[in-house]
Length: 316
Length: 316
Image (cartoon, rainbow over all chains, first blue to last red; front, side, top):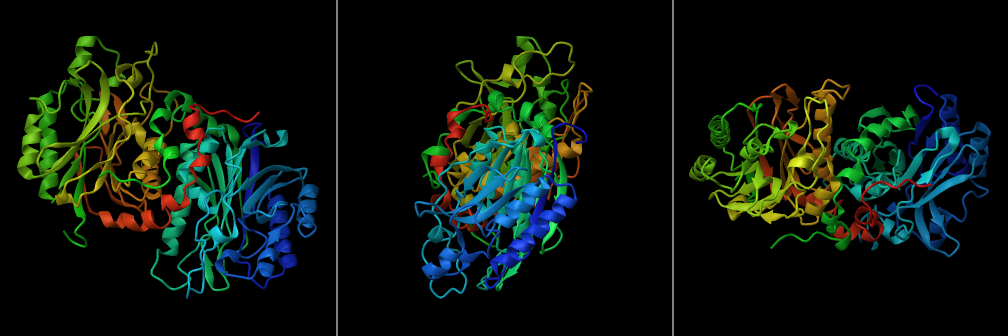
């Protein structure tokens, strides 16, 4: 605790690529090594990427049997218990993205956040699923999130972290969600102070089509987090799975961003890499009490289009 | 017309300071000089700042008689007619911010956009008024927008530009509006391709209190425009009144931003300065049809908080 009793040391645990052939045990060892690295740097909360336990499997059509092998039937479960055990022993909480197979059979692209005691504090299911439901014929790589997952049904539920962290208001997003100001604002309207998110974002078109550069894609990823953190006066940790997975490239660029939208830590590689920052939660107050004093300045009667229509409707 | 038949050359006409003692005629001469400068560079549409005809008068308490002298009873009116005449002669449209005294006596912080024929294409009244209604005792400089203006009552009405410009979908904001993603999204949901806005933003606390640096404030101004342009796949022109007005400093940093959120032109001074860019409206299509295909990806049932509550309500 430095400047304030509401200071927490936070880490982003960027992961390099995970290949389709990699064993679960191998990947879990990497997660535990990253956790220990972060804890050794004093981190109290570690953010892992989206779908951190596996490769980004929505890039392939696959049979039901293989598909199910990527999903978790419970969280925790025996395969991931060693990560939970090590985190509790270190007194470190974590955000973890994973594919969720719910008891009722529904499938979600999900994330949890645990406290320093290993107890799950919050659950989130990705709302903004990109990609397509149909398999695109003739394409080696797909983006089948809309096929493999249902849309998240929990909304954007903020939750409190423990007293040891200063009882922060926490929120979670997953990957594409970070580009949608609506989700951020729903958390902002719950007074969020620290946003946690992981991602797997393509660095180029793996099918060889013309597309934006990896540099531009990384800029977009960072820009969205910076501006939404600023406009909601919150800290944000945004963490990549990076590098080339079975021929498909993913951007890196994991960042920790302050409530002014300034990047305070950023990953430099496309590999397993830990970034750390001291997060003064009270640094959110300036924005929340002045420029973004929602109660004083918002005018919801003029925002109806945001909920009354889905797609764009241009004027005649 | 270069790359596309939907290309329009756009200018931002940043203004240096306007002092309280400056005559209207002097200020109008400056506007016309900026217009001619932009037209000479081929601009078809010129964006002037917020409250471009006067100093930023909400910084002072004042008697009704002086206050009314800052307002326009009609637009155009004899005082500003020379600007309209010159613009029509040059075939150049413009965005102009001004204080509006409506026929029914209501007062708004407003903007219009005219076409190349001098006809008003769209009207906007600022929704997000910053500042306070009450005069803060003992402070030399105030921010009395909530006292001097009513909240805009027109919502965020997109409108079409003329065929000569490629029939773009246009939208307007004013100053503080640019920091509120709700307004941008309401335009995005109307398929906006070119956002126009002017501002007067403090460079420091003129009363001498501790505050953010001018550099950080300029970063915030640019960041909000970049990210909201990206997230709505639109071009944006954001134009300052800059420099020191009667002892109160205003940031500059006028920008033209593309639908990727990249700055393509930026003012370098705090003075009267024209920035110009070639705006390919069809460059919005990539974002609108893929990443930000609203119809495919938005989930409004989870956005209810945005309209159902005004202020932030933290979890227990």
